[in-house]
Amino acid sequence: MRQWKNRIALFVFGSLIGSSVGMGADDYDPPRVTVYGTATKEVVPDIMNWQLSVQNKEATVEKVAEAHTQSVQAVLDFLKREQVPADCVQTSEMRFGENWIYQDRNKKRDGYVASTNVSFKLHDLQKYQQLWGGISRLPDVSLNGVQLDTSKRIEHRDETRKKALLAARKKASALAETLGSAIGKPLLIEEELNSFPMGLAANSNMLYRNQEDSENSGSSLAPGTIPIRMRVRVSFLLEKDTP
Image (cartoon, rainbow, N blue to C red; front, side, top):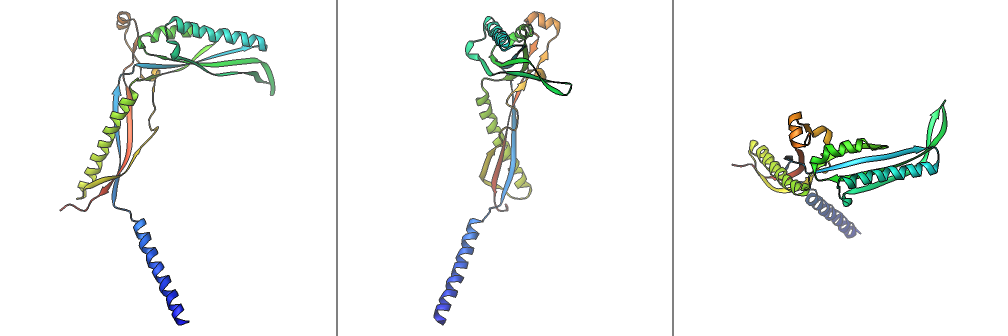
């Protein structure tokens, strides 16, 4: 009986030792230094993304359907006359329904409403003023926004990401050297997604030339540049103290 007890005790003791060794190996966390690296590149935009909305309100279903069809077609015809490529134009989020209002604290139906979003991509930025003026004269049309972008965004992001990684390594190395250490191989690399907007609103980035420049160039738009920003988080192994 005593032999069985001794065997059980040895088995439990051995299991505890094995468990402790295993936990120590799995839970080992090497010393590291973690930093953020950020890089920005200013590029000249060559694309404008326009967002329009077309909305009609009429007393009857038949009238609103007819009016809305004509309004949307007027926008598409205008863009065609301005030689905006058909594959750069898109209609979406077409909606139709009853129009409800509150009058004397009561909900009341006030006819019917129909709406459609129209978006298009413009590569010739010099046509901005011409398109703006034409769209402003179209009935039942609202301009929701214009975003500046670049057709080489992927290439610019790849280049800027590399610079952000180099900036992270430089920062980590400086931190380690200040404390008499050095960095080793990277243990973790993460890209901060959606940290910065993909495009820039035209009305916040465009500079307008003076009247003389406008008459000479035929456009009052100077698109300037848009920032391509990348941010990464990197952890490096922290080596032993340098001699």
